[in-house]
Amino acid sequence: MAARTVTVTRVSPLSAFKVGGSLALVGLAAWLIMVALLYAAMGQAGIWESANSLIGGVGGERGVTFGLVMSVAVLMGSIFAILLAILAPLAALVYNAVHKLMGGLEVELRD
Image (cartoon, rainbow, N blue to C red; front, side, top):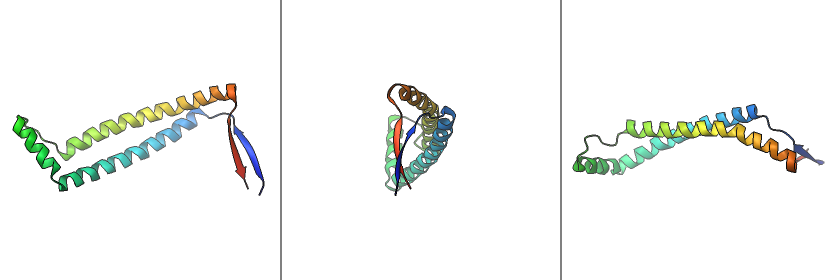
């Protein structure tokens, strides 16, 4: 098997945006599924009933509901997904600048 070393000389910011956006959407879907499963597990353990009784005892009218938890999870996940999609092309630009100063990333390929 012959091995050869290849240097990555440039990363396209548009390509980085596409990959970063795709990974961010997959991560958002996984995040929402895990939040829903965690909410169900905590509901089975009785944690939400205790939290709602505590909120009611303090004087609050609204409790912790599935809709509230998922709304907060969607908001947080969307913010992180947007940040990841924005930071991916910026990382590509930084890599391209560093490549000019220090050389690129060397990858060894084998047949």
